Length: 375
Image (cartoon, rainbow, N blue to C red; front, side):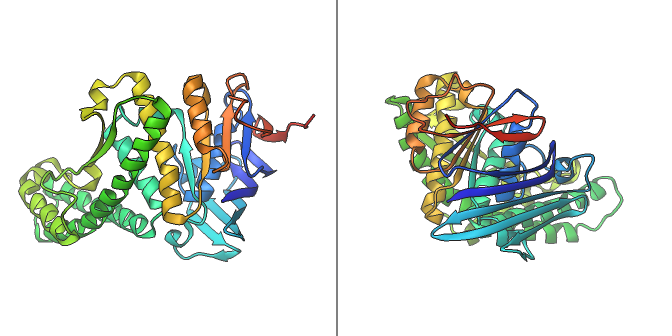
């Protein structure tokens, strides 16, 4: 899978540009705040219809424009697909081969992308919200059902939390509707949890292989899913998980009424990374934590390939300077010949040129992109 042509209008500081990409390696060089990250964010948005930097889509529209328009030509499995996303202050619309799609779930998955940014180095030691966002973004792009249930869960969760606030403030008194919302939320939660177990199980095995490749160390990396409802296990069927989540909602009901918010469920889950059984958040060195984060990203690539039979785009946003030469070489060797790769950097000195062969190099300045002439 690769993106051959990409057009952008009114996306952050990218006023209007059209770029033809190499199917292997593309490097964007420029000073900070020139638009390199915006360009990768735009590619990521074309794939997932969401940003890794903000949940407010209107922030992506240039302040001088009324909309942002993204389009691209994707090549995969001997076919070509034209994709388009239109972002307005009222929402977003998507097209596949010039046919507007009624649901985002029909669109997401046409183009897969894995993004690795400096923030992802916080995946191990950062807040649980970062790891939950990681699960939702990455699993959602490879499984339409996960994407649907994740979106539905947020919708019903907002309904329940709004009703809890009204109850806690005495604006309403009937708790019957709260029970209905809890029942509905538990059913959706069960669908999410069973899929998280499934995908994280594969991710753990792939990340273990990647960690051995990157670190040349003897430690064994494992990834454990930690649902907020502690009684749940990977052996439980969806129906069992539903009942356990619902029972937990009932136990937590007095506390939820007092706090005015839902205190358990997938929005409170976490992932634990372990090296030889020890929590990497607590015991791993900074170098080990970076190797884990990198291993997880490489495992994502294998997960996407396992599910879709296509390798995703790999977007490396200013991370090469964050990695030492050994990890850089391990990363580039691992992906060599597999993925179309996009790299942003402020200079070319830290790039492992012995691995990257004849990349396309672009210069980015004030939201404009120009291709460096080949010698």
